[in-house]
Image (cartoon, rainbow, N blue to C red; front, side):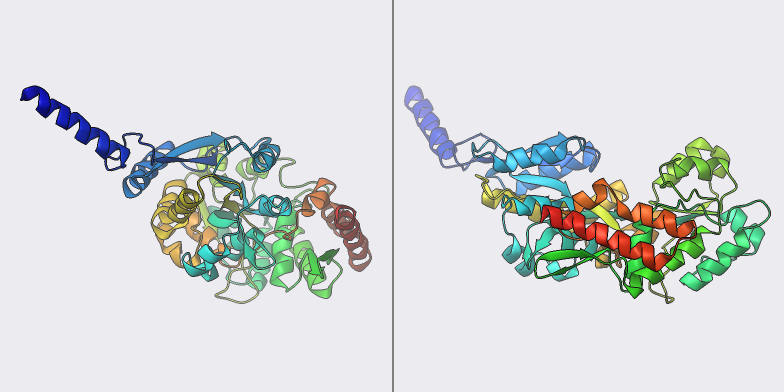
Length: 419
């Protein structure tokens, strides 16, 4: 009798396992979803909690999260998208401006229906959503964002009698002029900080390049773009930033830490590097969004960050979509933002980071954020960036309109060669 009872128990256990009723047993109905995420995008503690929660809610799925290095990731992703052996990733984190080059190779799954019907596509930050979209089809799903703000020294503002962060670009110029005295630089702004220039151009209604019938052309010579450059010129002159170098030559964090500089334009996280180099500035740094033309509306800024994509040839389509839905959904997206000091993928979720001054300023600006032109050929422009040369020439006295036409023509040529 005892032997018969043991046999029945064994048969029952085998049947339950084969039917997938016992989760976590590795039965044939369980699928593994392989996810590539970039180094330092999320903490291990966050990933552990997410994995546990996701697998609990999806007992038929196992997550295999593999961390990748940013260096060389472009070629690695392209190779994975071209492979058809079924061993590649099912979900990939990519930089928001990288999405167009992967769409161009027809390697990504079209997620338009899911994003429009279930994920609130209309509420996404434009700087994350627009690069992920090609001809009204959504391939990249916004995950998190980061962008520039103004980091300022509270003590120097107080000494200059500037009692509150400026709310408009006109106020910003006036305050910076007051700060640019007594041996202090009102602002340290390198002459070739073209990402910051792009924000001023967008704020004026211009663009770096525009598309017509699938063909891209440089647009630095439009009146709107020239107004953006003129504002940059006026602001940059209120400090000692080098006109023929960008913000990394020398690194502006070091200049801000050691010099008498009242402001820089940078991501909030740079403040940590400043304090590390000059501990005396602990508690003296504040943040505000890059001002816009009108009060109550921050200026446009370049939005960096990451989107999630799904290879079109994935063997775990439904599981991959479930992972994207969970990671980019309100619960886990806001949790990531709080954990890593990011901006969530929707402006209405910004309240989740309101308690951190620098991140709150970043989130306010992200609502007006943009990205570089959504074309895979834009990389050809940045490889030999004519915008930097244009900026230096204008800042050293050349005619802006003439130099803008030359730079716009070079951008068009770079895009046309690849086109």
